[in-house]
Image (cartoon, rainbow, N blue to C red; front, side, top):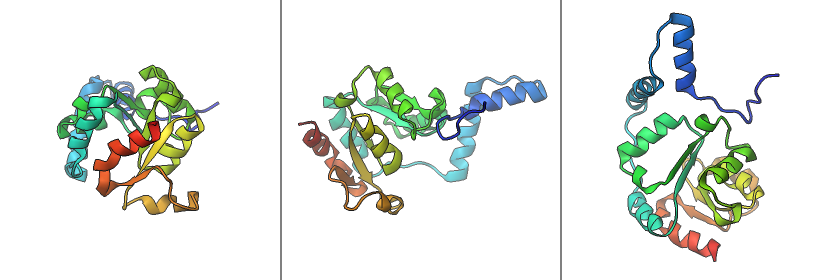
Length: 186
């Protein structure tokens, strides 16, 4: 029986290292492969930049909460981007779908995240811009959520609700995130 592609997620660097070894007899450490791919990735897509107020907002949040990254990405790329942007220091946990082998569309991903951080669902707030998997899936498990409405992608989710969600902030107003979290936790 094959893997369920709706739930499983691969680790690209690990797979590439295995293929190089099996097909070419070349052994390259997975970390080196990730570094090379990341450099190519930067050239292909350009450099990542922070939106205004993100760093300042993370400072405020870090003072009061334990922050974690739970991302549907290849971990080695995203971690490198966070380091490059200088914001990795605000996060205590880094959980990537590629590293745990589960997609965010699966409740099992969020269950694993809760296990890793040692928290119960009712004690956590999931913040994300993908309404399908960042908001709806964690809500089913009892997590509180804040949807970051990104003007570039929000139109993809309008069919999922009759009116805009109550716990939502516009990306341009990211600085309001601490107040939104405080409101839903109280």
